[in-house]
Structure formats: structure tokens, C-alpha cells
Image 1 (spheres, rainbow, N blue to C red):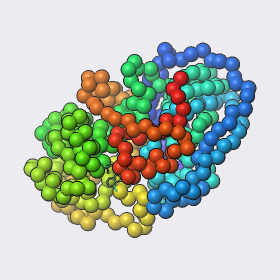
Image 2: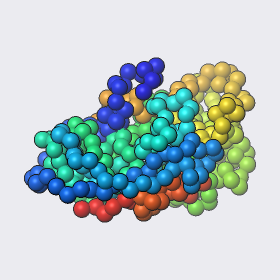
Image 3: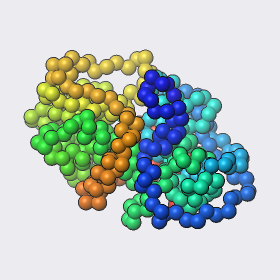
Image 4: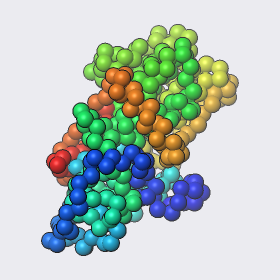
Length: 379
Ligand code: NDP
């Protein structure tokens, strides 16, 4: 990890492990008695990064390898992956751009977050049978991790495990802190969000609605736009693939735009920037339209000067920045969820062997809500 990117400690695995849940959320009810340690060898299946992708991820950029696992080390737990989180940032980690975490090295396992079940434990604090969020792990059927690096998830009746990757996971926290801390929404203001039907965007819009904003989403299909207005309660939605985005924004945002929650970048961002109000805010969350592009060839918004003229607050953020406040974000999102004020979708693809092709769904806009790979059955 580059020290210049912030003082988050030297081990990204331990850092991101805290991304989804603070340890105090551990529920004793979910814990079972430790079983005897397994003695048989476990065969693991792991995705290795073989090449840095150029453009979209190609089939030979990654390789699925089967190998025997070493015996579990003292203080560690063996986690069978149930769900692997597939995120746009996986693509960032595959490239060697100057990012917030070091890239995945060529010839090493692909990095990713997951939820799994402890099948073997040599850690006093995490018994066999616990369902845990691994934080930063690898794309594999099993992960051996330090016991203190995993977070036991609470069992909440009626709540699917995958919700801990969506509204109650890192994407929910991204939406919550990005909007409330940087967007600073006030009732009556107009909020525009891009990639609006995705994991982060769908949460942003609904949090904004709950705070009294007029919310306009931009998404890539009529089906997604219908979901936004009919299910998620957005005031309007724009299908950027068939509509003139500028003309549609003029129509749906007659009083201009006070908050642009930016997930996409490129020409969509420019159309929004052109319509920002004085003293508007722009949480810069993601630029997915650029992740497959050559970083040397990407350009900034052509109407950058408008941010000066409108005195817009632009702040890039990475959810890591809000790590120490996750308990607050979790409580706020859980409360909205329990009050029936958050609708969410989970897009589940099955099979570890499908990880790279499933990841492509994010860049083709084929997911609705949080994209998750089901690797094995829940206990
Ligand atoms: P999503 O579930 O939103 O999936 C990505 C979506 O982006 C796709 O469904 C697609 O929807 C849209 N998209 C893809 N390519 C393009 C393109 N070229 N132009 C316009 N839209 C495109 O993913 P997430 O919710 O996980 O992430 C959304 C954004 O938030 C990403 O930029 C990601 O990097 C960022 N992020 C940032 C975090 C942070 O800490 N700063 C944390 C988590 C995510 P459509 O059909 O509408 O095209």
C-alpha cells in the first residue's frame, strides 16, 4: 500500500475487513460450538491474475487454478466462500493505475470481498459455523484468514445474507456517507444520480428521497428506469441510451441541479455539470465509463470551468475514508430498511468459474442492483 494514500495501516486485508461490519455487531446467537479441527487436505479453486487487461477483461487475463491448501495456521480460520462480491473496483485493481490500493500483482490471486462460513477454526474468537464477512479476500472457494480479520454477521430473520453486500454492506455505506456527508442534501433540492439502478446509485436515490429531495436517476434501459420510478420511488429516470440526456435533464430538473452523485463520468457527467446550481455539491464516487479505458488517454470534463462558475463542491471519496463511522451508517441504513423505505435488488450469478464473465455484466449494464456471485450453498 502506498503510504501517500492515507494512514490506513500496512495490511489492506485487515483494513477492508472492517469495511462491512464493525466487530461489535457480532451476534452471540449466530455462534456455534467449535468443531474439531479438520484433518483432511482441502482442495481450493482460485482465480489468478495472469495479465493486465487492455480494455475489457479478456478470457486469458485470469486463470482458474486448483491446488491443495496448506494446513490452517494458528489464529486463522478457513472460510468457505458463499457469496463473492463483484464490483467495478475489481477492474481498477487489475490495472496498474495509481489508485487507492496497490494493484493485484500479476501471478497472484485476484482480490475481492466475500461472505462465507467458517469450516475450520484455529482462532479463539471465531467458531466453526459462523457466517462472516471476509473483508478483503481472494476470488477462491476457500480463504484462510486471520481470525481477527473477519467479522461475524448478525442473523437477522427475513434478511438475506446478500443484503450485507448491498444496503447493509460496503455499497450501502458508500451511498449513505457519500450522499449525506458530501452531498449534504436538503429538503426540496434536486439530486441527480448516475448508474442509478446499480448497487450504490439505487441506494443514493432512495436515501435522497427520504431526505426530501427531488431525485432524478440516469440508467441504461427502460426496464431499469421503470424500476427506479415505479419501485424505488425516484421522481424521474432518464434512459441515457435512447434519450438526449441534456434535454431530459432540462425537463426533469426545472430548477437546476443541487447535487450530482457521480458514478459514471464521461459525457453523462458533462451534461449534469452543465446544469449545476450555484453552491451545488458533487460527491465523486466513481467513473465507471473510464475503467476499461487507457488512463493516459482519459480526459476531464470539457466544461470543467463550470464547477468554478457555480462554486461547486467536488469531493472524491473512497468508502475507506468513513471506516470509523460504519456503525452509524449501518444503523441508519438498517432503520430505513426495517421501515420499508429501501427497495433493493440483488443480481446473483452462480459458479466461481463464471467470475470474470459475471464481472463484465457491470460494464455492460446487465445488472440490476448489487451484483453477487454465488460460489457455494448457504449452510
Ligand atoms: P453498479 O451496480 O452501479 O453497476 C455498474 C453500472 O454502471 C452498470 O449496471 C451500468 O448501468 C453502469 N455503467 C457501466 N458502464 C457504463 C458507461 N460506460 N456509461 C454509463 N453507465 C455505465 O456498480 P456499483 O454500484 O458497485 O458502483 C457504481 C459506481 O460507484 C462505480 O463507479 C464504482 O466504481 C463506484 N463505487 C465507488 C466506491 C467508493 O468508495 N468511492 C465504492 C463502491 C462503488 P447502466 O445500465 O445504467 O449503464
